[in-house]
Structures are given as C-alpha cells and as structure tokens.
Amino acid sequence: MDYRITCHSGFGAPDDALDLLWASLGTRRGEAAFRRGVRDIRARWTADVPVAMERAERDELGRAAIFEIVQSVCEQTPGLMTDWYAVSPRG
Image 1 (cartoon, rainbow, N blue to C red):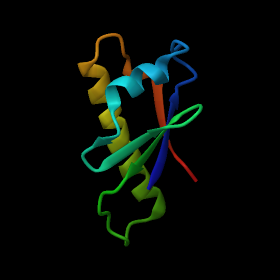
Image 2 (cartoon, helix red, strand yellow; image 1 turned 30 degrees about the horizontal axis):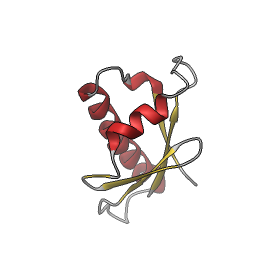
Image 3 (cartoon, rainbow, N blue to C red; image 1 turned 90 degrees about the vertical axis):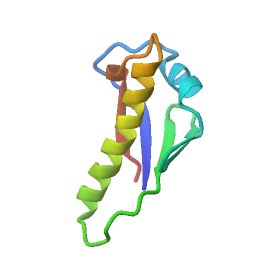
C-alpha cells in the first residue's frame, strides 16, 4: 500500500521540512520503505493485512503505521515537529 508524506498545510512548516525529515528517515524502517519525490516523500507499507478488511480500513492502518514512523523520527530528531507532516494514501 502506497502513501505520501507531505507538509501539513495548517502548521507553518519551514520550506525545507521534507528535506529535514528525509535526512533522518532513511529508505527503510520495519515494514515501510521510503523514497524522496519532488514534493513529497513516498512510502510503501508492506505489512501483511487481511484481505477481508475493507479498503478504507487497510488504508487507515497503513496511514497510521507510516505516521507513527514519522512521529518517532520527529521525537528523536531535534528541530523536527510531527505537526509539520501529513500522511495520505496514494491512489
């Protein structure tokens, strides 16, 4: 399942917020792989999710897992704020 990490429009992130996150994020964390796009960071969540779940439920589980990773990186990296970022399904 694919997601986009972008700057949250309501929290005044600096212009280089995605660059700052990317520098601390890396290309892989657990069941998630990341790559830098032009205006976002692309995330692929590869967890084994039951097919019987509704698409919206699977999307939300993945979105929450990716956001949890972003939150963890922000907590461990001085100068990053979780509020700067939003995670949404790519589709």
